[in-house]
Image (cartoon, rainbow, N blue to C red; front, side, top):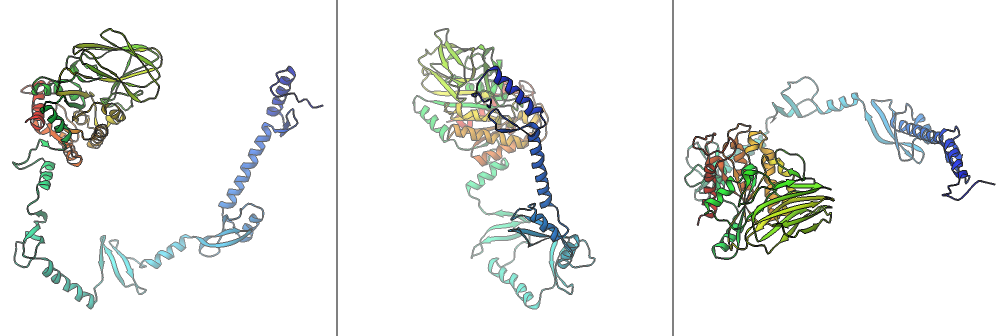
Length: 583
């Protein structure tokens, strides 16, 4: 009686039977071995034998299809043996000037397809039928010729030429220029340096060539402005340091403030360390009267020289900082703010602390991870935020705070991923005014912004930025990173902020010449911004034009070799005031 207990049995007899059968399957010489139900199983050697047979059959099949047969009968024999499947082709060596003839297996019989593999001799003959045989100059290449070797058209030194036209064609051709000239060109004497191109019936010329260069009469204001802006302006009517672009959203918000409505003209500085340091953003506040409305964007940047509106740099404990600038090539593992800064930890108790935040309303932006964290204002009762692990950017809003300076502490609870992207503060006690955010990233070059550009919109869409200054180029220039990545990075910035805030007023700002050298010259980066301003209808301020073309710190315009001092920042922010805030 067969030994066939139920599956899943753990009796010693079953385990022993399994062990013996496994030994035979792996080490036995037979090709099959029955299981305890009597069904034959392939042993290891059986599987290897089948694999060898499949490989050999494939090799024979490929060989049968791929190699030419010496005779048609040899190929037909391969068909009869099943080596060449139906509707497949094979090749038989040719007895004439071809290498091989293609045959198709049509229902078991080989029939020629009409295709051949030509030999080198055949190719040479075909070429000789189409080219003039014999020796000729390498600079003269015949194109059209007859059986008597008369060449009617050829290339001479790479340029088209033809034999003499016949009498009829020559008469037609000779008559065309005069007839064309009489009909389309003004008749009369004029300087050989001026060739009329577009004119009317009474002889007024609207476009002409002057010494071979195109010129025209009375360009309209749009074209004239485009040209003057693009070249930097050579006339007294142009401004080489400013191009005006779309300003509607900004001007409308400014009009609301001017009319006494409760509103904030939200301005931000974005780009490299010129925007992360407080020098330029604070200078704008100063030239506008020293009064600001809201504390604005509260960055995860921990720069001591980035303090603005009385807010301290963040103090981080047991958190890891993400910094998307400084030629970083890595995207943030758990998101970041639009400025490329963020703090994260995983399964760790840690804290982030700010002081001096004068805000009645506060939004905390965070990466929705697997962890939880608390927000504590002024040491009061913590508010717990539990992550849903969606991987998206979210915000937690706190309102009803007093219009006094507050401390904010965010603490991770030690389980899962917690990542803080930044905060934004508003002060409803100040009815209206200008708000200035610093959103820079030290050391950044154009290509760095691709690391974290996908995190710009998820946060910036809530900030209602009216006027965005993008100051970038110092690091691109001094590190000789080139204008291609610079241009691409600027286009990415423009694109992402327009996605976040349709109608946003953007102003590109090229830097002044720092104490560095690079290739290409700084003027090339300035030119890229100028071109983008026209192409994308954004504003442009040329710091390159506002400052000396070579580094000069004789009057203290520079804080160090790379950054403006408060005196130098005034040159730039006074220009901003003139172009955007002057009534």
